[in-house]
Length: 122
Image (tube, helix red, strand yellow):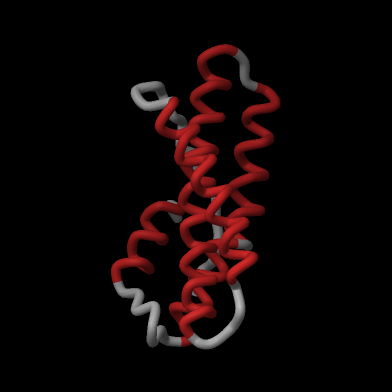
């Protein structure tokens, strides 16, 4: 599974004001479970890499963080639309997202390594 492909597929069908139970579950899973799996994969690879390979792995990890934080933000927006108070959590996640977007923009044009990992979002 490619994390970005799963996120794009989920976002393409998302209706924040009236999501299906499956959409809410997928947003939550993309924001939490896959985070552990891709972080573990990247951390192991980064720990053994050096030089440009290490930088490319770090750039790839940041790109995946942007996707994870986007999914988490969507989940919180869905919950807010359903009446749950998520303002504080959403503000914190938005701050993290903005920081990682800035890091990704700063690395524009640099190599970014993608890693394969397995995660279930059903």
